[in-house]
Image (cartoon, rainbow, N blue to C red; front, side):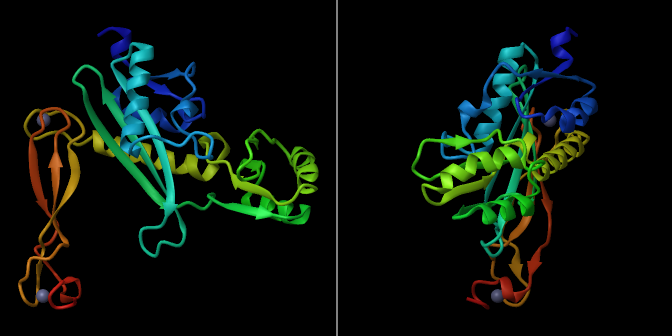
Amino acid sequence: MSADEQALALLTRHGKAAVLGPVAGELGLTLRLVDDFDTDSLGTFTLEQPRQGSQFEAALTKARLACERSGCRWGLGSEGSFGPDPYMGQAPWGVELLVLHDARTNSQVHAVAQGPATAYRQASVANLEAVLAFASEMGFPAQGLIVGRSHEPWFHKELRDLEALRAQVAPALAQGEVWLETDMRAHRNPARMAMIAQAGQALVQRLRERCPRCEARGWGPVGLITGARCECCGHETSAARAQRLRCPVCSHEAEQVLRETVPAARCELCNP
Ligand SMILES: [Zn+2]
Ligand SMILES: [Zn+2]
């Protein structure tokens, strides 16, 4: 194999290499950083540059670009998203997605980690005390803060300490309330970095599963199949009955039953 066959390229300016090394290790590859490309041009978490397309597409684009720019066979793309939690819709929730792209077979394996996004917070504040309280609560400066004002084209992302924060905020407060938000870039967000590491572990686990037909790595669930029956009336509900497993290379598929029945509480007829 050539050197480029043995390297896993990662497009990052945000220090993710430290937590994604185990993915390369699992594949017996060395991690090669591609840092001459500004991934912020693909979308940022602030209002400057909204992301286009789905989270999966964004991660895949980064993985493909990493391959193209490095000449490596393997590329890894990472993309986070933040929004309301899927249960009550009230707490901030983070989803970290990793896509491993094989440029030779044009196939992908992905993995996800998700959970409460403890470091995802915004506030509009009117005085210095409120700014300092926000900074202290969020763990600044280990957790980065961005200062700005909505509908105005200025943002300060590179505040390194309380002194710099004060110097930035004090004159701005004289003009009115300022907008504070936690920096969601991985290298300024320790909680996010930890979740990216978890996604890396999930990807390592997935890569250990082999396709029963062609032995390729990355055999695993790609979707749910609905139709679990109500244990009371037998109605076919919209609850998941099984998950679909698929090989990323040969597309061989299998079904893994999760449960044949669900309680009547999940039934659209018994509990409309
Ligand atoms: Zn296969
Ligand atoms: Zn029923």
